[in-house]
Image (cartoon, rainbow, N blue to C red):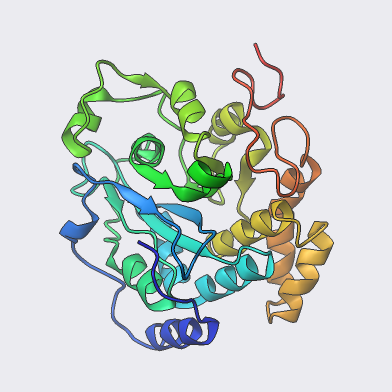
Length: 317
């Protein structure tokens, strides 16, 4: 997938029209988003010779369901513009949605990688914002499993350049991927549950993973994710900021913004209020301070892997 050229103006027009509409983004399961026996590809083409995959894994349970709506109606065009300004000339976006693997009707939904504004927008708006869950851990690990084993990126195979994966969350990760859930929802037949740390090692062969935690996430949730990902865990000050925080990560790692101050100036110039920019910068500062240390890559170094073991400290066990 990934055909078509991106137009920022066309994307703004699409999101502006939707923001003025009273209709919900989507209100049912789209069978084209089923992960069962599916695969996704981010391929190079004559039109996009150096594709780079960016995956958004969106928690659509409860209050987190607001993030897809904000992306669809307001912030996604700005995110794409930041990618292009950061030197990512051929970004391809894919959206995934996660809920609760046991109680929800659609615990995992998987879109396609796309490059054009219309197709990116179309797949995002196909997601069913189920709003379920049961006050327990969501199926984040199923999305990570799909990204690790069912996604092919030409950027990795041809250039050794990993994509980006941004996961929104408000509860702790499960300790392992359930083999039964993988069989039922994805169609693979693993012999046993896969520990989350082993899964993360697999995922990092293809993607640079980041977790964006919702405001109000408990200290226990922060600690659990930081134990896995260290400074790659970004605490959102407001759920509306997810796209801009992700954009800041890309701008910092792709080298277009030498520090968060430069990125903040660009956001102000792009029309964001200073209050909005202050929230985004607050979420980025801990990560920016760790760039080049403790497993966090240096700008444009997107092939280094985190060490096994204590990712919060960067010290392997």
